[in-house]
Length: 189
Ligand code: GLN
Image (cartoon, rainbow, N blue to C red; front, side):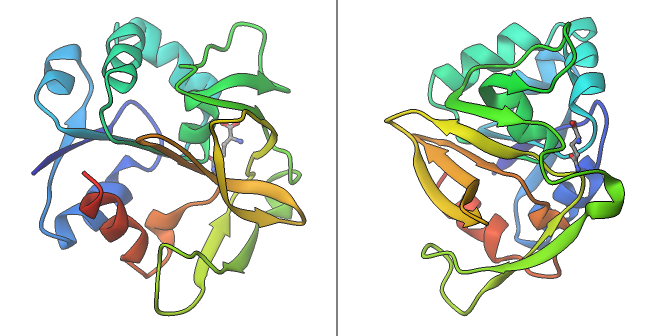
């Protein structure tokens, strides 16, 4: 199964490694032609302001928005969560988002790089014990729309949400030494 990983910036390589370990065929997406070839897409962590600019210069913004709106299974982690939301809080004025899930996401909401942390999350979709989640200059969700399911919180802030086939996480599942998160995503495709 060809699973795209947006490869403009950030830690796309770690996602590709997880997907390959699970038997999928990760495709680095840098152009609209790359996107046309995949069944699902992962938007990685990194820097959402930079990714927003690069999505525009690569002419990928509208094609990705259209594919996601058309029901393509999509996972966004950290900066990817920011990009997939409807509204960005504490963003840069020229920063765009894809409005693929009805949430408002606050950038750097847990603090600066030095405030990065790990937390054990109990996720009902993942049997076998808590998932060790790594938060790096992470956002959290400030507002969720009615169609959005909140799957995990930290200090009562939503950090894992789903709407239809779009799942967003404020943390970095690709950096935990645990493939259950990606396995669950692949099973849902
Ligand atoms: N703080 C970053 C941003 O605003 C996201 C951090 C991350 O992806 N680890 O884009």
